[in-house]
Every structure is written in C-alpha cells, then in structure tokens.
Length: 216
Ligand code: GRF
Image (cartoon, rainbow, N blue to C red; front, side, top):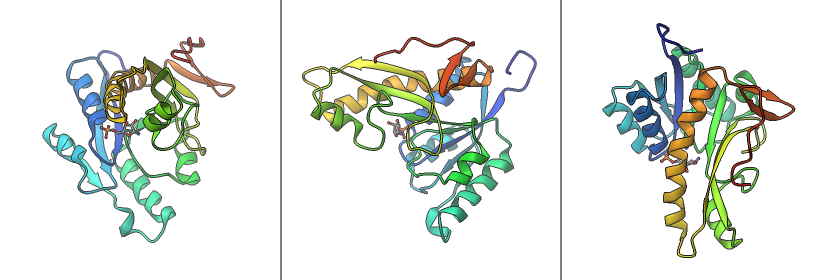
C-alpha cells in the first residue's frame, strides 16, 4: 500500500525500444499522479531509446543482453538477479519484446504486468494494428494485463478503446493507441500498488468489483 509518510513502492520497468510507456510512468510520478518509484529500468537491447529516457530522469538502468547467455533459462536467471538486486514490488513490461520462460513467470506470479496494443483477448502477439485494419474492425485499443505463462493472455486489469477512423493507417493507429497506453499503464500500476486489484476466477476485480468491459 502506498500512503502518505510511506516510501513509494518500487518498480522494475523492462523495455526493448522507444520507451514512451516508460516515459509515461516517469511523467505520472513527477506529476504526483502515481505514488511509485522506478527502482530500475532494464533493457535487453543496449541501443533502446528508452535507456536515454531513464538516464535523463536519473534512474538506474541495466542492460541484460540475451546474446551474453547460453539459453533462455540463463538469460531469465540473469534478469531475475538484477530485479532481485533492486527489490521491487512490481515488474512492468513496457514494450519488452522477449518472451519470458515459465520459471521466471511463476517466480514473480501476480507481480508482473504487461501493456499490449490491442483489446485483449483480441490479437495477442504482433502486428495488432495491421490485423485490426485488415479485419475492418470498428474498435481497437490497448490493454494492461497480468502476465501468465500464456502469451498476452493473462487476466486483464484495464482496457481502453478508440474508434477506428476510415482514414487510419497502421501508423496513425499505432500513434493513437500509444496515447491510450500512456494513460492506462500508470493507472494500472497505481491500482496495483494501492492494493486495489484482486484476481478471482481468472478475472481482475477492482476494489472487489468487476469492471465494465470498456470497448468490447
Ligand atoms: C507498445 O505499443 C506496447 O503496447 C507494446 O510495445 C510498444 C512499446 O512502445 N508492447 P514504447 O517502447 O513504450 O514506446
């Protein structure tokens, strides 16, 4: 629980690229909208732009590169060592483009969340914007969910949707969905850190209640 007088609880934010979701977390904390602290930013790619954002914000960052390890289990173990060094309450996958092994996930079960650019359970995996356009969907959006062993399939914490415009391209849709992501990720983190989320029967409850299904 975060409350006045207590230290905000720590996050590990895992990234692979641009890091605009990391930036949204940094900005929400700076604006006093999210009582959290980013204990470490971890990237699997040394060239990730998000690492510059971390540096600019004065946050500790580490690179854990898959090519430095013999297999996925060794990579996952190295990642876990870094996370444990920083002692975090929640692991946030914010554009982290690697699949984590079952051992890693079960070690942190209930303490890892991911942001995904679709209205899950629709379109797990890649190319979500292209798939939404190809299927002539009228709605699209973003979801934050708990990470389980199944790709992009864990219990959904929050979704937000937008209407696809007839002029939308993959690029405009990506941009518009990104803006939604930047709103819902800090909100989901805040709910988690305030102890407002529980999972019951594969469904996430907020303050013990089911949420209306935004956009579905
Ligand atoms: C986001 O669209 C996120 O949903 C997906 O990867 C993208 C990361 O964007 N998992 P950024 O690096 O946070 O800008």
